[in-house]
Length: 261
Length: 261
Image 1 (cartoon, each protein chain N blue to C red):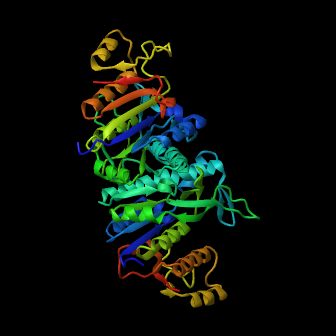
Image 2 (tube, rainbow over the protein chains, first blue to last red; image 1 turned 90 degrees about the vertical axis):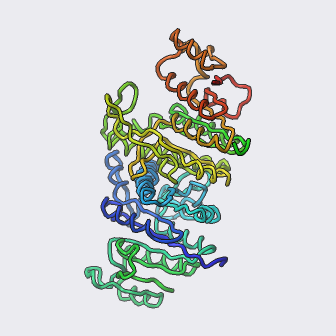
Image 3 (cartoon, rainbow over the protein chains, first blue to last red; image 1 turned 30 degrees about the vertical axis):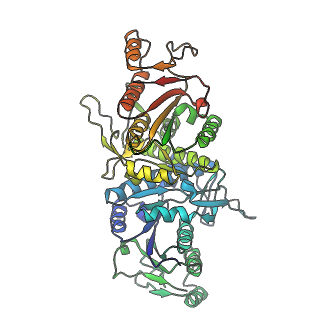
């Protein structure tokens, strides 16, 4: 650890992105976060909408998008184009010097096409390495990187990559330079002990509690990879992780779930 | 002039972008240009193709695209998304640390919505200012900016902007820091005295010769704004401008048209 400077990484997901008013409020709140920061955004329903209009049929296996070549083009257009640039324009309007990034830009996120014996995910990339030196240099010049969920293999091929994973890998890589705080925003107020009850937010989860909650089936489906991803990031150098509703950005007295080792 | 360092700006247009093999060759040639450099790209037919697939009807007045809100989205998706990221990925594969930019990224190109009493161009922006300090800083870190033809108004609105104009405005702004050479690539070998004869390339055009060629009708239609744009850039600080076929990039013995004041 060279310094104790802090950086905040915020990941926003589809539910915010699909709601223009919520998105603007989130971006204004994000713009007010002090110190170095990075925004990572998912894609929302826009890619599926555009794919449908183009006559493509989104393919899913186990809730995961299969990315064939036309669908990759739609992902690039939507995530790196439409969404990333609208977010960047809005942040610059809020006084933040934001620059949009795919992993290809500045060779910031190198990935490799997923190898899986059972499912051919198509043009999906798993993160191999982060060019943290370049990202650090830019951040130290008060630039705020805005990452979309597109990476590249270093040989000219763009790949679709999970935005949660991008966030945690960025956090891990930047923990060389900063104390890293990650805020994962989603549609709930946090991890719920009862998914039917919005008031059942678990305020803190550590690995032992996570195992217990898994055992009783209180945590399941999409929350499992999210939490695995969090524990992985914490074990690799990220200092602090919060999961909560997007309205917590910039709020100190909110309800959310804090993830600890 | 702080220094006599050189920078090369290359603008590639639709004909190269529509031809995958030509594009890769151009990007490899561009990657070999020594010293600071910037690539600016137009959109090609991709935006029209995608617009058509989405059921939009491209509107043109006097050969100029009218950009309504759905068409702006297509331009952002195509120029800043699909094309920009594919170009950036390819350049990084060729060893160049390329970062893709719209004018919103880093607030690099501020524009204002075009005011025209006769034609409502829609979401078309005319360049107001270039954030040359940021661009200069990035270039001095051996980053190669790749600009698409999207700018912003600084208030969150993205705008469609002519790629030739973006190139000349970038050249003018960077002439504070560098001796600027601009190469405009297009489908012909240069400015032709007879548009039917590919061998009629005019090797040099200055303002006086331009006036003569205009008077006899040898230069007309789309070439007029291109050349006006060149003379404007030269009068504002750009040192050298070349118009030619994209195959001239990196070639010293090619045929092309050199524009001089």
